[in-house]
Image (cartoon, rainbow, N blue to C red; front, side):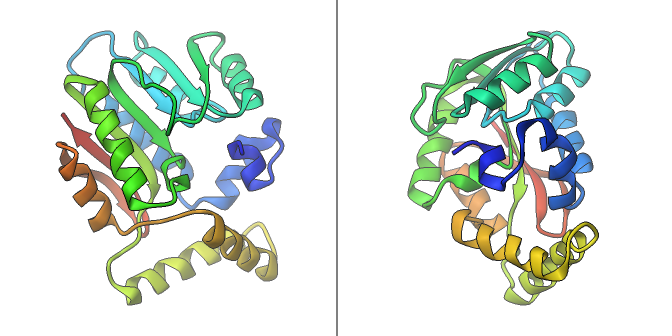
Length: 220
């Protein structure tokens, strides 16, 4: 299932709607794109996993205009949306990024894509594949929801997410969103994500964080 269908969003309305669902969305995507600027190569190849509408890819191009972008997504409609958005500046591969070969690259990027991986074993395997695909000096950049280790803090962060949703939806609708996503998506703690990245060989940095949302950078 593509990102838009998963969230019940029409592809043409994705960017406007996602900001009503995800707190700090623009800041988060901007921070992920900014992290790519640390890459030394002048013309980096960036593989964007679950590229969706191309929002993160567009922000990366703004930071590194000479980058070569490759977007992998299982939804052909979203790939077409990303191609239009980026005026053909992105090459696309239709497929599930868990099974599709990741081309050799300098950056693997993702925004709200990797939480669709249902088990730690599968996510660890993806991180290992990403590490193998990256050239020396490359990085993995992922913007997503990463839970706190403490259940008390998790409860607080969930309340903050609910408050954000209620700015655009009724309380009942907002609660239904979180209940549905809780069944469909898998959010690991930040500590567990860092552990899996390190096990794959990455050096890990958290370059941005606000409540349960963060940008994780894995350095090869």
